[in-house]
Amino acid sequence: MGKKSWVWWFVTLVLWWNKIAMGEDYIKYKDPEQPVGVRVKDLLGRMTLQEKIGQMIQIDRTVATIQIMKDYYIGSVLSGGGSTPLPKATAADWVNMVNDYQNGSMSTRLGIPMIYGIDAVHGHNNVFNATIFPHNIGLGAARDPELMRRIGDATALEVRATGIPYVFAPCIAVCRDPRWGRCYESYSEDPKIVQEMTDIIIGLQGEIPNGSRKGIPYIAGKKKVAACAKHFVGDGGTTKGVNENNTVTDKHELLTIHMPAYDDSIIKGVATVMASYSSWNGRKMHADHDLVTGFLKGTLRFKGFVISDWQGIDRLTSPPHANYTYSVETSILAGVDMVMVPYNFTEFIDDLTYLVKNNFIPTDRIDDAVERILSVKFTMGLFENPYTDFSLINEVGSQELSKRSCAEISCSAEEWENC
Image 1 (cartoon, rainbow, N blue to C red):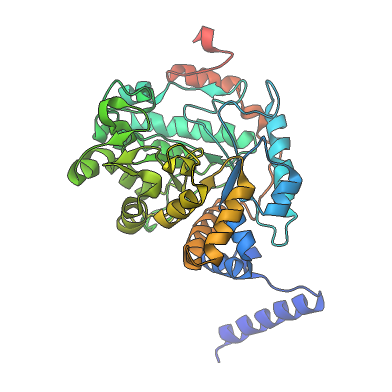
Image 2: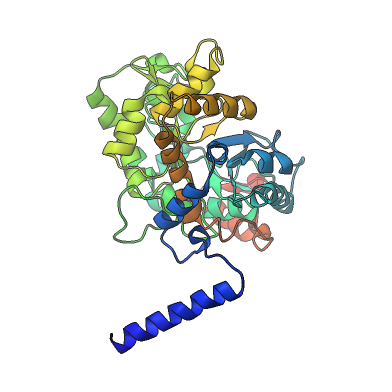
């Protein structure tokens, strides 16, 4: 045995003996020096079915409490559109709220942190005094990927300043009919322009390191957020522009017009993808196994997690929620990993538990979903830094950011008239 090997074994033995002497058990998933895959595997092996199902749930902040987070192992909370902790809530108010919910998650048996999400589609647009940017239709007209990176960077900073690590952005729909009422959320009718605008993901999440494998989520530290490419796929191509309707097209057109921006987003390390309310040739996207599991996760090798839209699985039936057990089964088997419930979480838990225990949904599908969710959380550093301090709160609506934003065709809420 060489000298270096002997020294290595000696140091390892000393560290191991110290842990025994201190009465500590070495737990791999708590060790930031371990690879993400090792940590995920270790943690998953310790989880009960109830804890796994809890990770697959995202609830609205209006039904969340510290006790609910603890008792049901809830994996994620969101603010629905316009949902704030207080009227004209300050950044500190937001931080306190998010940290309170995190207290519930961190007090569970395994201490798995929750992830808080919010729409930040043109700046941190739900937060009072935040810097607001033009909608996507205006930004796409600028034809400036570098500008998109700077907007992503500015948005990530303000979102993190409020204690939130996850945004439901960007929308990379390709609007093919101006009658679609959400065309303003699309960068362009030209798929090539939409592809270029996905550089906002680099601003939101950080520059992916050279040599990174395609499909692996990447978030660069505490000033960056997990992004969400939405809405998969074809939401801008519905017949006559009817919202949430049917995109009737062959596979070639789907892949050449609506899919390229998703491929680019995955290459840039996007952490999550949101399923669309719309259908492709009559099949609801929340139920489309071939596209969600087969193409997105298989062909494009996406390793992040797929999240439903707001009550998206409910809309698999007409009227919505008519057969919720069917909706849960179909969406999970299709490949949806996290469900934006957002209210009736106990019903979701009961139905999914029943479906797994009675072998309608295999346990490996549950494990796949939870592995993906945990991988994003580990990659973000949430296990090391589950709470947010107040060090960034002055970044929200800062004069420096507002002035720079004015120069870059955007304004803060208070500076709007001066821009």
